[in-house]
Amino acid sequence: MSQIVENKKDMYLYGWADPDEMRAYRRQHKSVEKKDKRVALKQAIEQGVKPGDYIVFGGMGSVRTPMAAVYEIIRQGIGDLTVGAKGSQHDWNLLTAAGLVSRAEVAYGFGDEIRGLSRPARAAVESGQLSVISETTNAAFQWRFTAAMKGLSFYPTRTAIGTDTLHYSGSKKIEDPFTGKPIELIPACYPDVVILHVHRADKYGNCQIDGNITEDFELAHAAKHVIITTERIIPEEEITRRPDLTKIPYFVVDAVVEVPYGSHPNQVPYLYSFDEQHWQEWLDASLTDEGVKDYLHRYILGTEDHYEYLEKIGGLCRLRQLEHIEHGIEKYPKVAKRR
Image 1 (cartoon, rainbow, N blue to C red):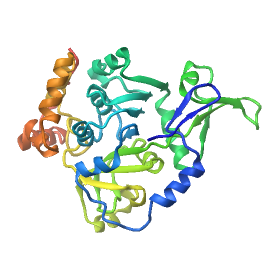
Image 2 (image 1 turned 45 degrees about the vertical axis):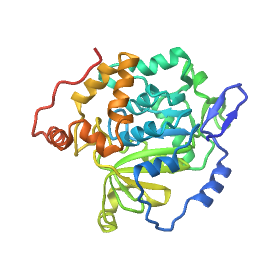
Image 3 (image 1 turned 180 degrees about the horizontal axis):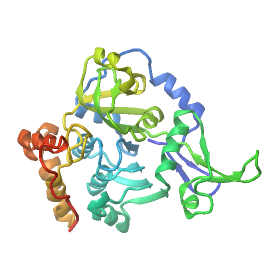
Image 4 (image 1 turned 60 degrees about the vertical axis):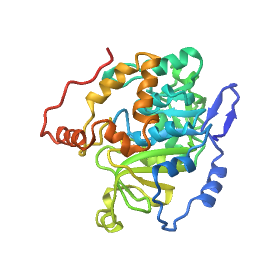
């Protein structure tokens, strides 16, 4: 469970930890020895995610998010989670709809981009099920992880000074010792667990990502426990042949899970596109509590694992169609929107 530290403003810092304690933790729990870290998804979630954890998901918005891992968390009913919603959407919104998120630190997290706002997440706040414990910016979240990656307790910036965001963010304003002017100190964030979905990984945890890596590099170095879900596991020889493509090194990774189409219904760039048809089904279902319950049972709680889920959403025929859309072979369909 993530450490909760009370600061002088009578606010709480979630995910913060003493950098020296984190260095000691990493020396004890992280190793440069190459070990085969391949596990089944069920095992990775059972061992890596605990009730009360501070959890952050990789990717950005609806792109390259670890949805298969989210579904497995729901199947196992792991709750009382705190989510760092740095740009997360469908992942943590679905967990919230399942009643598993108690607290959230939010940059952008209640919308599904052009598809509209999340009714279940908004309803969770209104009912008191979900507490928004801080608000910040996407940039500030990345700087929190950057500070943690560098073994620091804060990251200095001036971006929120003069805004209400400063008050709600957990940051502190002090006098810059060099200029005498105000400067903001953003607290570092060391998540209990980070789950990232990547294009390729070897059995040791070296990960290749094609395209934008967002904050995944910083997240992998900041977290106490890192779970990688990957479209496919490749030989180490392929990793060493193109070392420039390796964005996350093996020694920060704790578990590697091969999960093809593991971001569905979201996109993995260059592999498969958004499933707008399935997105529309979720958006329609999410309009009512009963619809949410039926959706969760049909596609997640009523399926044994990710592969049964893939069969439920249309199987190989549907997945190949999403590949064709991504590669421009088929026309992009109408974008799903909340009605």
